[in-house]
Length: 209
Image (cartoon, rainbow, N blue to C red; front, side):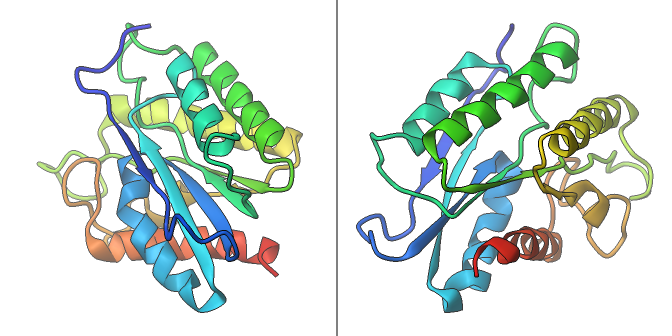
């Protein structure tokens, strides 16, 4: 596999020294970076801490597996009630990067690692959000990029159904809806991130009682 020109990781542990409050974790990319703070605000009254692991790694990249081992294993030592997993926007825009088959196998491996390291956590899998061509009206998508997003989302939903894992359909929540605009072709404006955060929290609440 080829890597992107820039590869990055962003780890966040909220009140890292607190071992008493319940914790949830959100795993994803820059979109996840965009909604984490809103998720924390929405769960603050429940005294739940929201940790985050965001990166440019795509499922199917062995580096992602190693990083999941670090985040959810003994090195960090946290136990999570819920882990919200969102991976699909990186590593798939051209044939020189991760193939559909590699991505699909990678998703299976990521979930296997998380289950092994966090057996008490409820895993939720999210669909990836859409991309747009900012030179055109908001309801016109970037065809090549959205084609791979839709293929990946279809696999994620199928895999989740086969393994009794709940799905948070972030794509359906904001795609092509003028009230939830992008700030560029990939990322969103604040009102859109608030909507995504609401979806994330709603998907978690049944497992936080």
